[in-house]
Length: 465
Image (cartoon, rainbow, N blue to C red; front, side, top):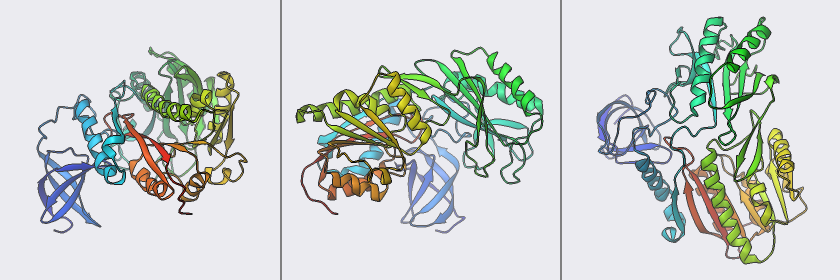
């Protein structure tokens, strides 16, 4: 086989993350955005360790494939499993994780507790970042998501099935408003134009809404334009209530929302939401789980694992909550602890965590801003119990060594990326830990992502360092 060849085959399985596998001429070909059982025709792109193919045509649907309920599916790059029932999505994700981890976790079938459904399979996302652009070169202004497989083309998604329904009304208004205004979108190749992103957040339990229009600086009629935009947003008939409208300046060359100065056009610069009875302040750039009901399932599992181990120890431990974000887990576990130290590198998140703890009347949580790798050298206390909720890249190797050297009796690892968790697990195993319990939580229906919640127990004093 060679690059540029056209082949046909059946998707035999899907490996995490969302990589369909075809066997052809003694080789495995990786095909993205596919489901097991589909027969496809694809174009071979390149060869590294494996061939990669791009689907040209689906010749036969999978036996369990359904018609997608989303009108944007296949064109928008946001979802990949809208063509499977929710039950089949869960089975597919479980299969991927089992094949990835079962050989690396002794007695996997005994420690694995199953996958927990999202209470909301649709309309669950409480945050979306939409991009201004066009559907094709030189086309009319569009506000939406990147087209599948494209860095430039933007697809309007007013009827997105995974976003909160209010978001569709907001982006439809924004697209029409700015199209009529004539203001150009920011062209990231030419570095011209102004409109970049629209960020929208909503408290699923409070129904508070925050909208942030992100623009490149320099538009001469910016002030009257934003006043009119503000008035139009406030006039929308929404299920929720707009509590804040913001304007963020972003002159960065990167195609990402970068805060280079944010002003409040209306209301306040944050919203509040509730999780497991606690109140949390959420700013435009705060880390907060995008599926609030799903987060309650995940954090309940964290609390269950912690409760079981802490009760057995017979004392209230010192807990380290590393990569703590806005301090959600720290505060949920605070009743079980003598002291909780939350460490997070994003300053805004740390400020929110401190305010959240004050609002909730929690006095035994201390939040520290800084990189986990560096801050662990500065904290004088030794943890009895550690919670890790790292970003997709996993734990920095230096930080991981320091965590293992503490020798805590138990560690809870919350992972949004089982591939980096598998890598980190090998280090924990060398350091004398084993998996005691593990559950999956489907925080992201219709996508290829899934959260893992793992309880690690120290079973030996062996230390690789």
